[in-house]
Structures are given as structure tokens and as C-alpha cells.
Image 1 (cartoon, rainbow, N blue to C red):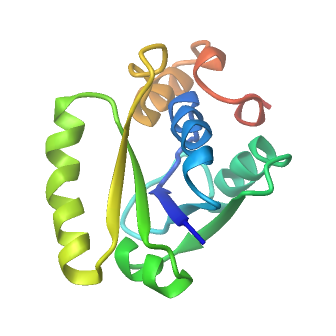
Image 2 (image 1 turned 135 degrees about the vertical axis):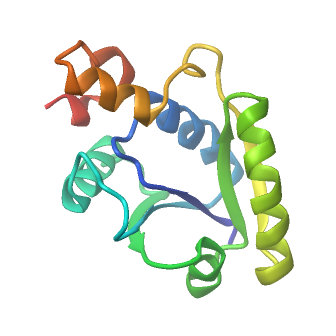
Length: 150
């Protein structure tokens, strides 16, 4: 079984995330959207809300599972038997950041990273931008799935 982990904080889950997962579905038998837990980070949405947003978004997709985890992503992959980490790349800055992490994950856990380049229509979207728009009561609805808009 080809299982991939798509890790992130997903605060909130955006159309950019949705783009990567949807386009990766034909490549894998199962994709685990893994919400990392970092006690030092301040989140806009609770863990339960973030998990619900994603579960509702993919409620009709049996190949998608949503999990939470602590610690290293590569260790989580080994724990659940996933051989791949799925990452979206919006630009060269993302690639430069992700490259070292991917090389380290392979070195310490023999987990391959698969990069998908974001579709042009969503490449400008980041959770940080969405949170800023939300904080100032702007219209964020074109940037997130329906479950986040509620």
C-alpha cells in the first residue's frame, strides 16, 4: 500500500492544501493528513476545529484519513507505516526550506518526500495570510474550503 502523510498545522486548512491533497490522490492508496501538535505555538483555531475542518472537507473521500501527532513527522510516518511525506511547493523559498527537511527525513527514517508544485490559482494562499485577513474581518471565503467558512 502506498501511504503518504501530508503534515502541517493547518491553521486553517486552505484551498492551497486542498489543491495538493486532491492532486495527490491518484498517486497514493491512502493520504493521512497529519496535524502536528506544537505546544509552543499559538493557534487561531483549536486542534478539534482544525481536525473538523479537514474531516468535513474530505467526508466523501475514503482514501483520506485525518490524524494528530506529536514529535517528528518522520517518526510518525514510521509509526503508521507511511513511506512518503507529501509537501506542496508554492515557490523557490518553499523548496529551499523543504529540501533540507526532506533530506534529513530520508537520512533518519528512510521516508521519501514527494513535492507537488501548487496550482497557479492557489499558489498565493497561505494560512498566515488567511489568518491576517480573518483578524481584520476581511473576506477570506475565496481562500478556504466550505468547512472553514462556517
